[in-house]
Image (cartoon, rainbow, N blue to C red):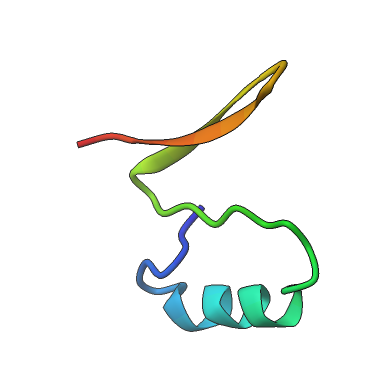
Length: 46
């Protein structure tokens, strides 16, 4: 959580850069990840 959200904007950018070899799924404070047996998707609360 907190991707590109104050006050974590710079540190989350750094994490994504440093761990670019991993399959990360960054989300912000209004998003969540739904995982089922076949895959996953990001959902957003409007």
